[in-house]
Amino acid sequence: SLPTMLTGFVRRADNENDDAPPLTRILPPVNTVMAFSIVSTTTQEVSKKDKANNPNAPVKKRRIELSPWPIHVNAGVNIEEFLKADSVRDTFGESTANNTASMMAVRGRIVSVEDHGCIVDLGGIASGRQAFLKFENVDGDHDVDDEDSDDDEGDDAVETDGTATKRLLHPGRIYDFCILPSSGSQSILQVSLPTQETFTKLRSSPSM
Image (cartoon, rainbow, N blue to C red; front, side, top):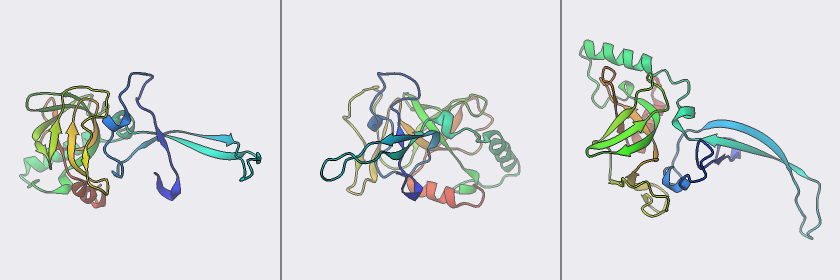
């Protein structure tokens, strides 16, 4: 669901892979607010019938293809400027603890689950560096599933309003992550997986 009562659709993969897992294994639960990139818009003529099953004149219907993939959503994100500013803050000893102004939200896809966390693909930003999510940097309850399964078992546990009560960490899963302060000098960026409330603060911050 998009603003102004528009709707879009998402393909199961960012390539022509017919063996891609279902979207329930890739995207967060229904009713989760997240950014998408518009890949294409087309207009098609669709024939409709009236109540008496008689054909009416064709009507035009807009199809909007959306992408949740990091390579599209993170396009244009200037992470190098953020890391440079973070280095300045660290040099002058400015506190970054619990400071949303010192955090940057990026889209990431979990590549693999390791012993102490997950390797995360950021879509080529930050000079192609990958990121690492330590389990201790995941806010809230979560389950770890290192099997790249195609079935729907083990989907996020949700409340009746669609809010996730426990998030799944497994290969292929897409989330919005935050670059952790003072990770710019490392070969692998350190990221966290905040709650939806934290992202709300980030989006409302004047610096974002």
